[in-house]
Length: 295
Image 1: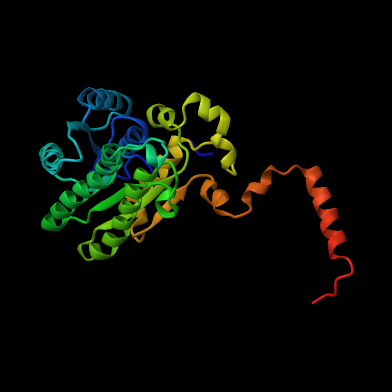
Image 2: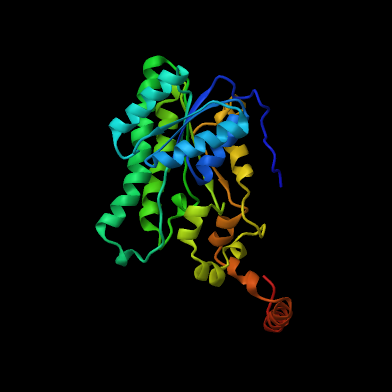
């Protein structure tokens, strides 16, 4: 497992990157990693105190340039204000990471329409607000911008009990692929990352409360039998933001230790069968096949 930065410290020099939801969790980790690769970073969130603290801490840790600007991704005018502050501070914006999200587990029939709205508004509306605002800016200023959307593995497959998130993330993935084609003529690339389990203090405890985590043991669903390390996702994000990935466009890269593939196979659950039982199954199958003509 590679726990050190992938790119050299000058790989993203003079490039300014806007990260939504950058104050905590994976957003914070990506901000730190991109600063270490030489980028200037803008983080935005509704939580002023949180992003200000994060910006101060990351500036001290990395020595990099980071700006915290309060904004709600659900409001287009907020995004325009965040962009204006970032451009005023750093001169331009090179890349956008749509990371702001919300989620909770619940049987769908127990949800109110307002609960559904909360998730879809943050994830889908927030992503297209930022994408449209930055895209218009890049096209107008003839900047070869880069969009990186953080989706989920179930954006492609769907998933019960997180239906609002699945719907919203599927929309973000469709936007990623659509704009990869439409905006390529402007030199704008659009890609996505679909992370599996990368534990974070806030989201992880909401999705897997102590009792549920103990009962389900999410790690057992992962063929590599471990969770992702934040630096692994940071390295992938940094690569996709950098010029090293200049020919990657419209792609979603899954980083989950093989979790979704294990869940996708019709008979993958058979890994719970002990070796002794397989011996019995094999003997039984041989007996049934005896005497049958070959084809």
